[in-house]
Image: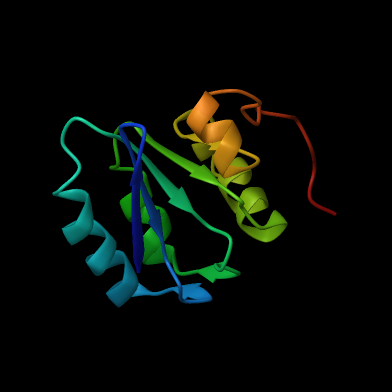
Length: 109
């Protein structure tokens, strides 16, 4: 996991292509150090995630995600987590708090 702190923002970048139970546990440990920061996960390397990560992300408060793969975005949207989390296109959008991905109605084919 890579950590970047800039402009009162704490950005965590998981380097694994799959967020497993172990990666989720490491993420939880890292989130303990984020008091007073805007927190985001840079999902640029992540292509897949386990159900454990999805269950844990429901408990996260005030966390944003950016650089999300289309597969993970579809999972988050179908589970209505896009309404709870702030989703952004890029790191710059997160830092500037602009261009948030809004909930869209779509169907899985």
